[in-house]
View 1: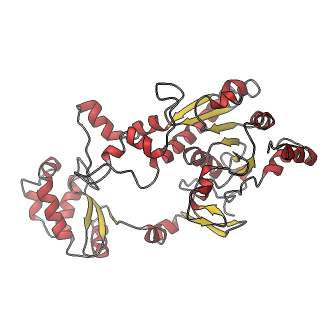
View 2 (view 1 turned 45 degrees about the vertical axis):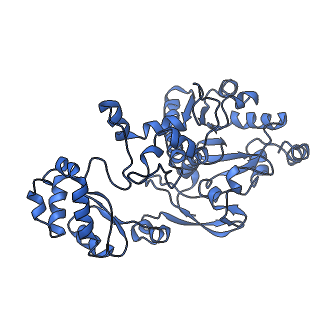
View 3 (view 1 turned 90 degrees about the horizontal axis):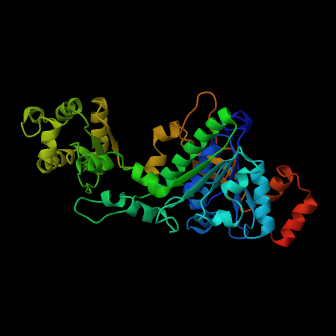
Length: 402
């Protein structure tokens, strides 16, 4: 497989105990694994991570959903409700650098696996809890999934066609963003631990992340009391900045400043718009949005998407086709950037996954391990990490702890 040996990578000396499932937590730990961390994924015996059943599609008995966020991990099955099982997790936590969990707040304490209990045995442990609403507050004990949090967190309100009903984003972006935030928080805590020798507790919630991710939309309201609305593919404050229908398929065009506007007008053969008092500034273009968008749409419909792209690229105007998945993963830039990788898998054969998005000059990330089968590494972890004998492992298995 591509990349450096794990011990030469950015997080090659970090062990992560991953008690999370679904998407936000596993996405976080996948990022850490991509950077070289040893990730031990703890799953329920027999059923495992919920997403293992979230299909079709399936490949080699594994759901595509599960496969998307669980590479570079080893799977061990442990019954946390069994006292012997929770003791195993305690033993693993003692020799780990990071623990990530996304159970309902308070549940880990019932298992004796909360941060306060574990740090007594491992004060260097960085412990990250990912939850829907956080570890405190009036919503603390409510269950939550991405779709619900995107609704409460304002994202759904601003997503969808102008004048239409609210829509969810096509991917569970609140989960994904929470995973990214959590991974960066963990790495920051590891940097601090390098200075102090002490770990710490990280409380990461989907709602908090979604509120922060509203960016300029939140600022519009907090600073100017401006309520948000849905704009479809258009931008509230920039015109033209949206998807238009070319002669054959849609094209996204972003005319984000005055220089681009003038270049855009010349490129589409409408130089007279540059000095038109209705369109001469972005503020005027926003004011006359309906008329200008209709005029641009009429012009864009006269050529094919590829014809416009050739013209706009020559004029340095940001643009691009609205790709489906087939076009995306055939795109020469996506392929050049190695954003599709082939990974050998025990039951699938060759598994295609998205690549590592961040490129490092000295310590590149890599897809070193395919997403594990359920419990695939139970014996390896218990004998290799904890030093248990094969007989002890078999005894735990017969007792139902693993």
